Amino acid sequence: MKTQSIRIDQHGGPEVIRLVEIDVPDPGPNQLRLKQHAAGLNFIDIYYRTGMYPAPLPHGLGVEGAGEVEAVGPGVKGIKEGDRVAYASGPLGAYSGAYLIEADKVVQVPLQIGLEQAAGMMLKGLTVQYLFRQTYRLQGTETILFHAAAGGVGLIACQWARALGVKLIGTVGSPEKAALARQHGAWATIDYTKEKVVDRVLELTKREKVPVVYDGVGKDTWEQSLDCLQMRGLMVSFGNASGPVVGVDLRILSQKGSLFVTRPTLAHHLTPRSRYEESAQELFGLVRSGKIRIEVTRRYRLDQVAQAHEDLTGRRTTGSCVIVP
Image 1 (cartoon, one colour):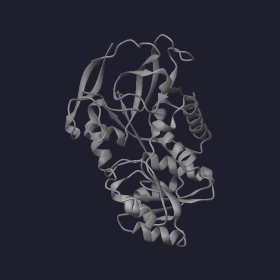
Image 2 (spheres, rainbow, N blue to C red):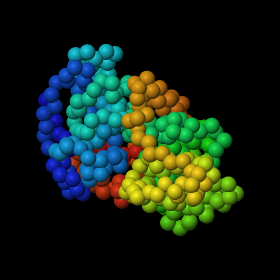
Image 3 (cartoon, one colour):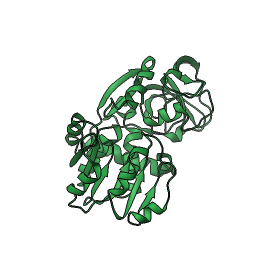
C-alpha cells in the first residue's frame, strides 16, 4: 500500500526533510503493519537527522508512535487486526501514515489511554521508568536533580518523582517553564538563565548536594552536574540535547568525590521482552491512576515536521508533542 512519509537523503538541518509517497509492503514473518495514529517527537529524531546517530541513507525519521494493527504477518501470536498498540523503540520511519514493525516491539494500549497520548508517552515515559526504577532505583527519600524539567521527559519525571515521594529539583529556562514543572510535581526549580545551578542546589540541600543527577542535556551541563553530586554519587547522562559529552578525563571523577557515571540508553532497558512488558505496565498503571498525566501540547502534520524540529531544538516546546499523519 502507498502512504505519505518523511524521508531524508542526506544529513543536515531541517531543510533536508522531505515529504514523499512510499510503498509499505505486507508484513513478513513476525511483523505488523500499523495504520499510524501519531508519532512522538523526540530529540533522538534530530540526532538521526543530523547524523549524530548514524543510519544508512536514505531513511525515515521517528522511532516512537501508536496506531491500529492493519495487517498481521505469519507467526505473530497474541495480536490481531484492529488491536491498538504503541512502541517506544521501533525502526526509523514512524513519521508516516503506515508503518511496518516487528511484533515484539509493540505493546497493547489500554482502552483508558488514547492513541495520541500513547504516541507521546512511550519513549519519554519508559525513559523515566528505567532512570528512576532501574538505573538508580529511587526509594522515596531522595532529593534529586533533573535537567530540562519542563520538557517531554522532564514533566513525566516531575510527576513520577512526586508519586514516589522524591524531591525533584528541576532546571528550566524561563519562569513559565518553572511554573509548569512545579505544577507537575517538581519540589523546586532553578532557572539556569538567571541562577547558578550549583549554588542553588547547595542552598536547597543545605550543602548536602544530591545522590544522583539525571542529565539529558549533555555537553552544556556536564561539569555543573558533577559539582552537584554527593561523594560517591551517580551521574546519569542519558541525552545530548546540547551536544555529546566528549574528551572526558576520568580523573575528574575521583577529584570530585569518587563519583560514578553511566550513559544508559532505552533499548538496553527493554530487553528481555518481559522487562519491556513490565515497564510499560508500570507506566500505564500510573497514567490510569491519574498520578501521571500525559498532555499532548502540540500537534504537527507531516508537512510541518521541519517546523517541529526547529521548535524542539529552539526549546520552544514543553511536554509531549506528536506528528499526526
